[in-house]
Amino acid sequence: MTLTQVNLSDTQQFSSLFLDYLEEKPALKDWYHRPPRLESFREQIEEKQMDASQRVLLTEALQKQYSQVKTPEVVTENIKSLQDSRTFTVTTGHQLNIFTGPLYFIYKLITTLNLCKKLSEAYPGYRFVPVYWMASEDHDFEEINHFLLFGKKYVWQTSQQGAVGRFQTDGIREVLESLPEPVPVFEQAYRSCETLAAATRYYVNALFGKAGLVVLDADDAALKASFREVMKDDLLAHTAKQRADEATEKIEQAGYKTQVFPREINLFYLKESLRERMVLEDGQYQVNNTDITFSKEALLEELEQHPENFSPNVILRPLYQEWVLPNLAYVGGPAEVAYWLQLKPMFDHYQTTFPILIPRNFALIINKINQKKLQKTPVDAADLFLDTQTLVKKFVEEHADSTLTLEAEKESLQKVYEAVREKALAVDKSLEGFIGAETNKALKSLSNIEKRLKKAEENNQETTVKQLESIKNKLFPEGILQERKENFLNFYINNPKFIDELLTHLDPLDFRFHVLYESA
Image (tube, rainbow, N blue to C red; front, side, top):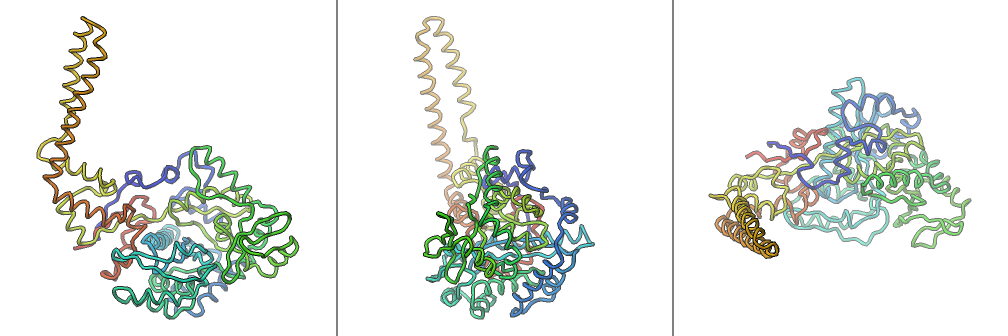
């Protein structure tokens, strides 16, 4: 692969909040702890401390989760090392999309792995363990039940409900059989593992285990028990909402849009086939959309005896993560970075170190076929991010045999009419409106001629223009970034070294869009 980079601001794909965070604008400085720079990690390491008993609890939970998984030695050693006070983690989280879902999930994992590598080089006295935090308790099944491969959408149909990590994988086997060719890693994952969480751990381990990636399922009774007091405080005092609201209000006052909306209670009630919000009504705790209710006393008893039945939502989940991990940084996409900024006061209240927020890598892969087409229709990498109409217009003008704009002629015409206007006003000032109207009419005529010229030139370049439009549609399916639509199998099936090449070329601290051209 060969690589070129495009500034994120030139792609017109990112919010001002995200871009201002990367530029360390003063308006946002109160909503994060340390900026996303390599040198920030020295103080982060010194500050982030974790109780030895919590490290043992984490290690034991991971060892139990991996007990039925064939694990690379480096992963086993990484898990053991978490008991050491000089070991820290870098974490990314994501839903359990079938077959990995969109490409950006792969970029998240690669950013996490490569950042740990950079940290190991910069701070050799410590060990850095990359962690994938599975969102196994998420219940938004429609967001994870499909993927796009070679232009075809594959969908897993099931009537199961509740936390998706607990779903049985039987129905996915029908998807396996409909693929254009077998993919062994997924064949093994979905045929040998009973639940979606177990299958996801299997394929992530198969694809990234040799690089040391540790997969953590937070749907764990022991880990939740350690978080019990925070969940109790959320149920009774609603501190998380109060603190998150503080940041939300001030971020919005600064002119930014916020991503998440804290609730009075930021917990779901979790049972088999059930994950529903908890609400407080008339002194009773109600599980939304069910007949399940608790008194305050009964609810606290439930929390004491069964913490696994309580599931943090988008507000509390980040705190839960940092509570159970010796974590230094979180790797996420633009929306994730934005909502983490709403949580800083909550972390301060619970005296938990706020992680360094590292944007994941952004990438556009141009395969050999599209690369050959681009050689016939050469455009700058940055221009690929223009909308199709603007891209075509720019390309046609740059490749026309003569200039297609009539700006010079318009300027000359305005000078002529200005001279006429001055002469006319000396004779009769009432002619000013008439001359102004005639000026606008003449300029409009030139504009129409200009449009006809451009259209004629576009027709002259019709073959090339259609090819450019085709390339644009291939690289940006449905007008959306490739990384948000296409699955990594589009490239992995024909290039088994695809992941290794991404690990080589993507820089976790280069906050630009990586445009990667496949080698011929």
